[in-house]
Length: 205
Image (cartoon, rainbow, N blue to C red; front, side, top):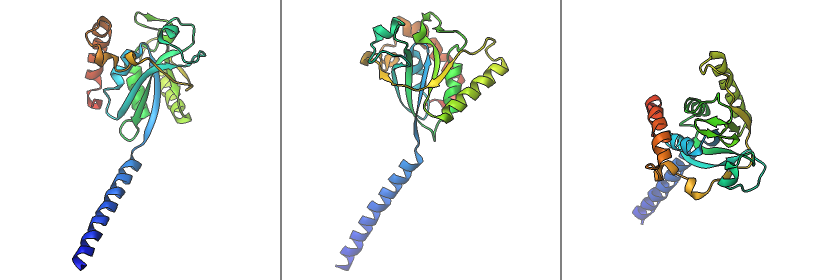
């Protein structure tokens, strides 16, 4: 009987210890959200999905007036929305400043409402911040880049409070992974991905 009691105690203690470890792991994790627009969201999604610490990337629309906008409506340039990616990340693995570094080095933030051949307000360079801390970091980083003359021309990236996020249609999600042989993927996204992976290879999954 005494042996049975001891075994039960050890088993229960083991469960409790396991739960304590699980809770400890959950407490150390810090999930946050970043929302970036840097041209076509297919490109932005493909890049940020590759980073260590990034748990989920969703393509969608933000910053406009029309409720529940469709891709066709956003592409018309009349809704006010930008194509963006909403990024869920573990801040204990990758910080917001690191995300900003990737953001500013993987698109041209000096061209107003344009990235390459993609033209329109929906393709504007924009950071939708979710906290005052994100706002301060974004504004400080932008100011330093402008002061350094890193881009030659002034950075026109919009820094504005996050608003309602509308997730894009299903076929836009994981677009590069699912359509890597499409012309846009071959001629626009692939070259950008190759440059990105060379520069940020130590941050890749």
